[in-house]
Amino acid sequence: MPGEFAAYAAADIEHVAGDDAVAALESQRDRVLTLLSPLDDAAVDGVTYAPGKWMLKDVVAHLADDERVFGYRLLCVARQDPLPLPGFDERRYADAANATHRPWASLLTDYAAVRCATLTLLEGLSADAWKHRGMVNGYEASVRGLAFHVAGHELRHLRAIETLYWPRLESRPERRQISSAG
View 1: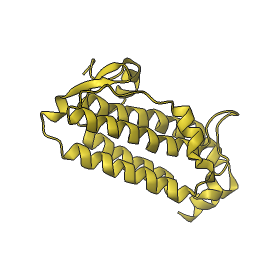
View 2 (view 1 turned 135 degrees about the vertical axis):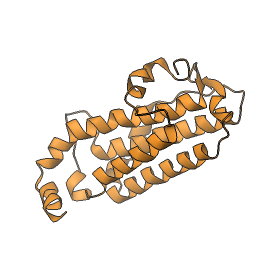
View 3 (view 1 turned 120 degrees about the horizontal axis):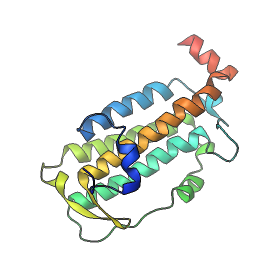
């Protein structure tokens, strides 16, 4: 699979279980929603793990935005669009997303909708389309590589949520109420 995605994504993709991107994305969606759906705005508002780092709401909005961009890339490469695809500045997107002012439930609904669209696109591809290649942000990528890139990227952020954000959530009184109610 090397040569099918950006070199910088290799470390993230190594954490994706198995060789079926669709199954990985379905499983990860369930894991993300199971973890985050019990929370509400009171529990997540203002939660970050360090000064200057994204709020948890920003991370969820970023997952949706990043997947939208990669979904477009997947579509273009799968359809054999010959034009090179540009990069994007994830920090600018995060700043413009205004996630901290959005309701938590809305962010999770958005995340789930984007994942559904990605899965629908991938499930409709022929076996040959998964092998198609195109230029993405200055590197050559296959549809398969881009799909695994989405999964690996999400896993990196999920590890951060579980190890860096979650301890802060656990210590909040609002989170303890949710834990005891569930």
